[in-house]
Length: 201
Image (tube, rainbow, N blue to C red; front, side, top):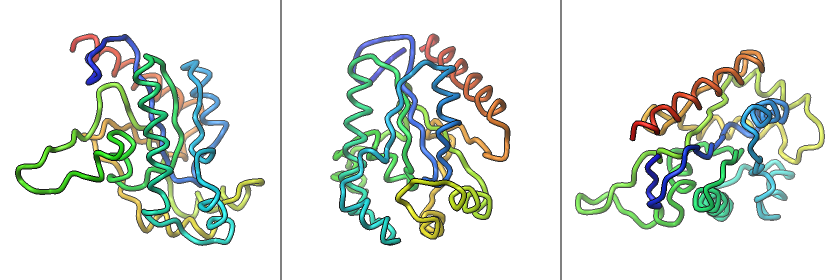
């Protein structure tokens, strides 16, 4: 597989993202069981200030999320550089957030001028899983969960800013109405397809 870092390997790390309210530990555990990869839970990387805002029911701003996204970028880069495989679970709601996850601070400095470097929409060794569903279904699941600091009434703010990923971002959409078994099977098929494509590169 060709990597921008200039080395080869036969597997690829996975970047998982969803609405925060969609993230189901059971879903991820099943995917992890199939892949055998470690999970980096994005919630563990939020600064305390962000957690306190969410506890108060205040939506996070782009500025609030920036240090968190940069930390997750470091995690992804560490896994890529070490040749390891991993899952990273986070609510990368906007395309710009996903660019920061892939490119770090470089995504913050590039302008839109004609002479500026254009960042790639995706890396061949990173793919996104987009767990999606209706507002009502996700809200219902958030109300039913226990022990998480994010309040269910913040879900609307996430829907308001959501920019669903497009094909060029190397994404696999997963409808949460499907069974766990169906979603895991779909991830397996997508992963094997990615690996087959990588072998030909």
